[in-house]
Amino acid sequence: MKWLDPSDFPDDMSKPIPFSSESRSRMNRRGSTHRTSALASSLEAAGVWYLSTLVSLLGVSLGVQLAEHRTAPPPSAARFLQAFEHGSGYWFRRVVEEGYSYERDRPSGLGLFPVYPLLARALAVGTGLKTIPALLLVSNLSLLGAFIMLPAYLRLRSTGDAKRDGGWSLPALGLFPAGCFFHMCYSESTFLLLAILTMFALEAFRAAHAEARAAPTWLLPSAVFLTGMATATRPVGVALLAPLALTVWQMEATMAARVRCAAICLPLGCWGLFGFMAFQFTRWDDALAFVHAQMFWRWGPSPAWGEKFASLATLGPFRATYNESAATYWAKIDFNGTPWLSLAFADPIYFLLALAALVYGSRKRWLTPGEIALTTVMLLIPYVAKGEESGTLSMGRYVAVAFPLYIVAAKVAARGPRAVVAALMALSGGLLAAYTARFAAGYPIL
Image (cartoon, rainbow, N blue to C red):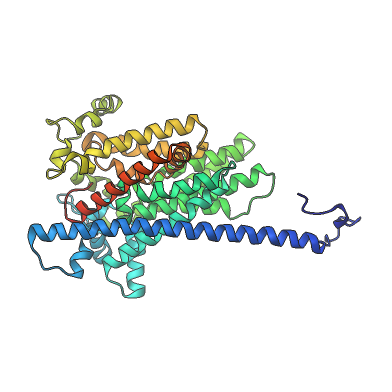
């Protein structure tokens, strides 16, 4: 299809090109089709988000009923809202209401990064909402944004079948069992949105260069800004520096230009983390206080570095999860749970499935180099940082925000037998509801 006929061009190319009415009509139709497609995709994403939220609300309702059956408190709306803030949600609420505090000899909320509670506090102050509704609104609106942006990102990086695979990526995201935290007073959904937005900006910047056209000047600064914001949202936010560095390396032509651009972009990409550290240094004379605060959330001792890396290299944290004598044995953490309904039991399974999906997606060339780098670092950070001290605890939560894995899941689902895919979706939805119910009832879902 031609956009312009040869007669559309004047003899003097220094003058403005007078587009014919037919050419303008073709361009307007294409723009209208694109807007209609984007709107339809957004509505589809909102629909899947709504269904995922319904599953979580069903789980919370069951969990509240279970908790009331165990302890017989009077049912109330306050009790229903409190069901969303167990675990880290309690500390996020305290940070929003009281600010950060730090004492070396007791637990505190300093191990939680500031972007999510700051957004909730701004919403609470601006609208008059109480803390828990504000936290929930930030979480679920962020998740809705992630649902909308994921298909948009897939269309940008499309190799021709984004519509089919992108459609499957939404159920994969919405029904992933460890994604129950997306709907709670947790920062996972906010980080997920920031990660997708960052990769979207980097992909748009790369695509502009690949097409030999000038990239909008705001794309790379936007990616740097979003990366910095992500580093102050979750500890794994620094993983976004990997695709940022890779994009700089690919787009710049000379080594000198690469080094110069990286020397500017990478430190600026840590502005959120550096700001959080500066706050701690000013307040408590300890820029790494947030690291020291994590010692209260460890389940086992911290061994010498040599012993630690030897254990990590031999998958010690995975073996410890199912070893009754280990401090991180799953039943010592989720002591009231049954294996098939325990996230602590399933955490290493989700992590190993994530590694398998990463390797398989890489070999099939379903993932871009930036996505491979991002997912690899996002999985390595928690495993190396806390694998020996806390085993595989919470690994499912880290897998949930590694969104390139949903691309692999979508590719597999689009090519798999429909009966098998339907059964897996039903199983995932059931586990999502079960984990949510046990979380709401106060069981240790970590």
